[in-house]
Length: 110
Ligand code: 5GP
Ligand code: ZN
Image 1 (cartoon, rainbow, N blue to C red):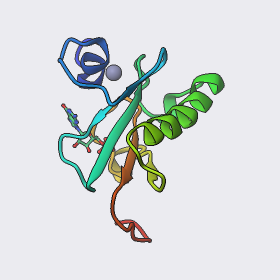
Image 2: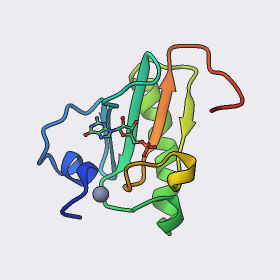
Image 3: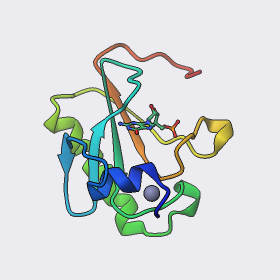
């Protein structure tokens, strides 16, 4: 999708260093990290949010890729977050998993 910032990152139009990538996903550091390690994992193809996702294989792959990305960046303990919709805190409408780690996480989240 032309106007989508994460599509531009995935395609290389915005040069970004990937901490992990495979045929279906890429992962890169969040611009405004909320933890010592804060990486975003996205599908290469545009899906606006989890509510628009309808591909069980890709959705399963995202979890596997999240674990592989965490492993690659040396995180053994981490939190995965998928904000879905503005009330949940979603601000970029290209499906993404936050991979957060490197500090004690609190519950409940804000
Ligand atoms: P959301 O609020 O949609 O769950 O998460 C969007 C995340 O994308 C935010 O944590 C924000 O800091 C990050 N972000 C927004 N624009 C960019 C960008 O251009 N590059 C990177 N690396 N992260 C971004
Ligand atoms: Zn997109």
